Image (tube, rainbow, N blue to C red; front, side):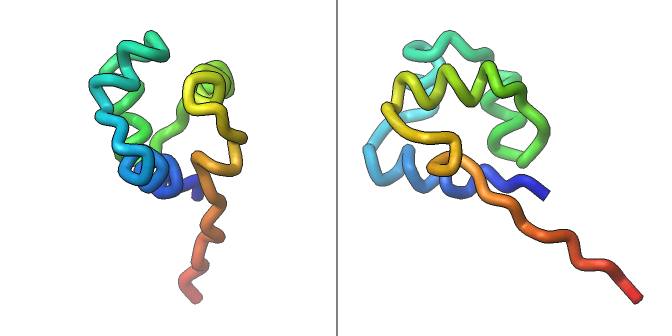
Length: 70
């Protein structure tokens, strides 16, 4: 699973409001909602966020291995 928890932390650390980021990047509020719930977003969205925040994709997301029930 992909988690955008690092993205949330980055916004907090830099004191950037989500509404401010929406304006700076031009992404929709629906896309922001996907980021908040760890749903799929395109690399184009990741690219826009990285450009505005001057960061790398790895600063925005992390891979969490799935735990198989046995």
